[in-house]
Image (tube, rainbow, N blue to C red; front, side):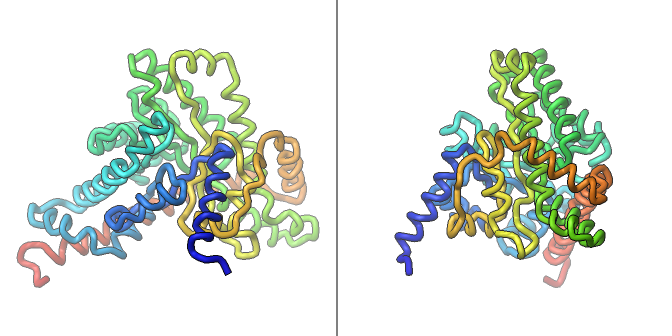
Length: 383
């Protein structure tokens, strides 16, 4: 049996090794309770966490299950704030607090890490101009240099990504599922940074990540493999997501080794790092650290749910770079999956559509929860 001190040293070493391998550990969670309790600060000092992400699902869960918002909700109700205003102020306040907690990391890493993301409304996922307008509004409201605005990688979102970067706004591109879309996202990034330079912005202050979703790919592909049911199909379960991410990393290495990028580096630009998202393992038959340990590579971010972070700290292994030089094998895996009947364009289309729908539903849940809380404490209510 390990004593408490030994456990902490072991977990610290594991997470330190992951960081040393070039992986920035971000927490895929945000709540006021986590901030006010000091838990987030302890994850930074003890678990090598150097950034955080949020999304409508995370906010909806946080507001439903915590009393930390009661005082702010009462103040909002007293002044007659609308549900949309209340949602905006609650989420902005949480992100501001988190940005402040991560400010030391942001300074220590020269602005590379210490980042916190806030998403535009998923209801705007297919509206370019409205997305760009809300990105600018949120950037101004939060008013923290270590903020990132999350914009979905829909077709309509690509132009908004370019426009936000051109305005000097740091962007976390979310809901990237395919290598093809990842290349389009990188093209949008290049165009935006070039425009930002032309607009006179300091490129060193602009950062971006492309959030490439992982576990959801295996969930969808495995379901289809099981429906096919042949021995070759069943033998390929659990291989699509990692292969897909490894191909995305190869595309990243290719795009960021061009003369076009070299010119931007000379102007102070930072690369748009791949971020592995959706890294919690959904199939209990797979190792609970699968989407961390099999995707170790220099210069990436892995945003983990807390359960995955703690599992890695407890029993995870850090075998070194598992991605560089694997593109040919990953392509062979994709070819084998296609041969047994997996229609990848359809897979990625379904995942993008469901991703937007899930965030939209969570946004509606968040609004409904806030509306209920406002009603309870509104002047004249029985509460």
